[in-house]
Image (cartoon, rainbow, N blue to C red; front, side):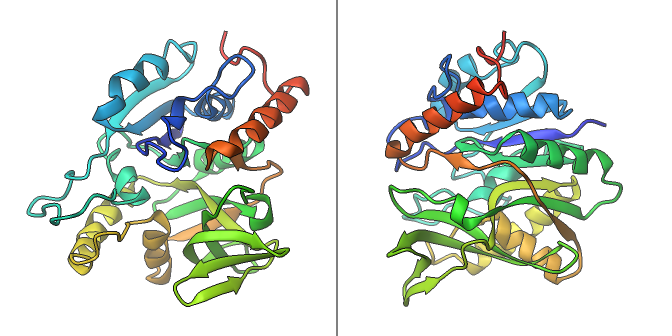
Amino acid sequence: MKPTLLVLAAGMGSRYGSLKQIDGVGPAGEAIIEFSVFDAIRAGFGKVVFVIRHSFSDQFKAIMNEERFGHKIKVEYVYQELDYLPEGYTVPEGREKPWGTNHALMMAASAINEPFAVINADDFYGQNAIEVMGKFLSEVDKPGSYAMVGYEVCKTLSENGTVSRGVCTVNDEKYLTGIVERTKIERQNGQIVYIEADGTHPLEENIPVSMNLFGFTPDYFEHSESMFKDFLDENRQNLKAEFFIPLLVNKLISSGKATLKVLSTTSSWFGVTYKEDRPATVARIQKLTDEGVYPTPLFK
């Protein structure tokens, strides 16, 4: 069974200032998403599922569809909204912030019955990264055998502001032992730090971080549903709490319900966290095209 690519594209990109999921950055106006889909097709993925919102559904679907991708991969859409909650739960008064990446992932439960990879719409992961994940998912043989592609934190920063990363600890066998979401990472005076309420803390240059390129078996949806209810119960008064993927991964690993292999890649990550990141991203994609890694136009 071919794996599925799940693309988290529901965020409107408040820091970026536009619908960055479909902003053209390729030589022929391709969006970052399209390069991920192109890489997924040549890595053997059979379907792509986009998590979007109703507010821009028509605009998104008019561009990101099977015809756009040359009918080389099946395309489905699911929706994330603030009030998409388990039965018996309601949105707390004053809550405006989305519920986070794992809530977005949960929206695809009805569309995915096979091993699947998760990516952000506005991150460029690279051919090798998608390839190694596709290989892992094609060979996975039991529930609870998960993976992620790890990138060195020094290669994932933005010059235009702080970034959010899942900082990982890994054992000698390359299995994840812990992951902590740090929402404000930047370089200050030559040193990489993360910023918390109690101040700044240093990070090693090469420590592996998650860029939300995870691989899961379908049992992950069941775990998500159960633990999301616990999350909602525990965070009724916290209107900004988010149900991040690393939060659930940590709990599943520590409880012994799952293992997560950290995969190495030769790919370099880059993205458009801020509008000011766009020129560098355009230049790097043009360079990959010039080197023959990608054709232009991407889909003919």
